Length: 131
Image (cartoon, rainbow, N blue to C red; front, side, top):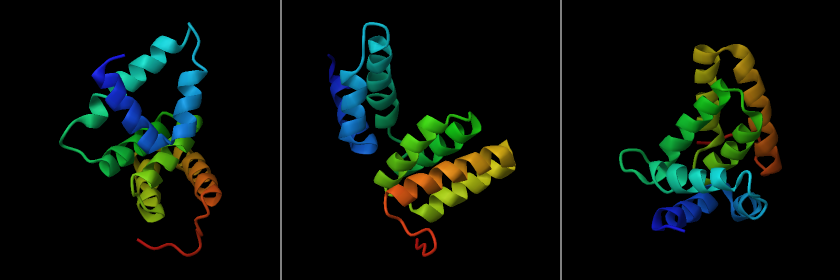
C-alpha cells in the first residue's frame, strides 16, 4: 500500500475504532476491496489529514451531511467517531438541531434516534448533559 493508505488507516482506526476498521478491511472481497482502499487512502489519508479543520469540526460536518443524506448506518458510525474526536453530546445535539432546520424535521428525528442509541450504548447519561 501507499504512505497515504497507511496514514489513512491509522486515522480511520483512531476515529472509528480498530474493531470496525479491521472488520471492514478484513472482510473486503475482490468486489469491494477497491472501495475500502479508496476510502482509506483518499478520505482518511488525504481529506481528513488536511489542515484548516480539526477532527471535531470534520465530525460536525459529517454528522450534518450524513443526516441530510439519510444514511443511518454511517450516522451511527460517525456519532461514535464524533465522541472519539471529543464532541460532547450537547455539540452533537446542536448539529442535529441545525439538521432539523436546514434539512427537515424527519431527517433530524431519525438522526436524534440513532445518536441517542449510540450514546446510550456508550454509557452516556442523556438526562445529565455537560459541555
